[in-house]
Length: 326
Ligand code: FES
Image (cartoon, rainbow, N blue to C red; front, side):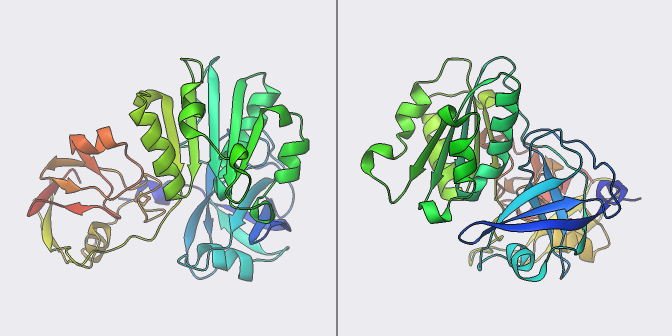
């Protein structure tokens, strides 16, 4: 039976433009090779890009939602990456053809008529900038906080500071004066009661913002986030365990240095995989018994605590056997 990933109709695009936005950050604009409209998308959406070398990576769309003549992504060159950002920066040039997925959105605006607190750390500005542009265009109430190391490494600075919603943009530099730094507790405490929080950025930034929001009592339904992928790290203490397939009773061994998805794949059981980093949610699988060792960044702490679903691309098991609803 084909997996859901097999059923997605991929799109061929041409790199219409590649521009340097800041130190180590490039924008890529994609369009249909022979013209024509791309599928519409909403703020927070991302696309999968199939890269030279066989990598598939997710990037948030950052051009105005509703545009169909092009998609724009911005990519930070990360030498520590598993080849995604390196491949885009070094190997992909204007005129190249690439394959992408249609946009998908796990990070959609939920605020209704309420206030939106948008927070982007580094290259995590991309989805929240798209949200800000859409909210400004549609009369939404919002503020955008953008945290970056230094102006030379800050993408879209002129666009945000010179744009139509510049009065709602607050930029905070790590190397700047103390008075311009982000006061997280104050920012999270001074919003209207109906505010929804949207956060995207590197793990340290996300952990700080989400941790403080939860500490201050923000309810989970008003907290929305999207992590960037990070390489799945196997720990020295990882041990082997078994996975049982509920539909067949088949039992598969997972070695200490192997992911569940990898072990299942070797046994001929293919999951729907995309990021393989516990970020996108594509491989979400129900757990019928056993205790997962959650290592993903997709489920909330409350969802993880229920132990009734897991991301087998990165998470493991605390019990000798997991029974998966496959
Ligand atoms: Fe993305 Fe597992 S493939 S979370």
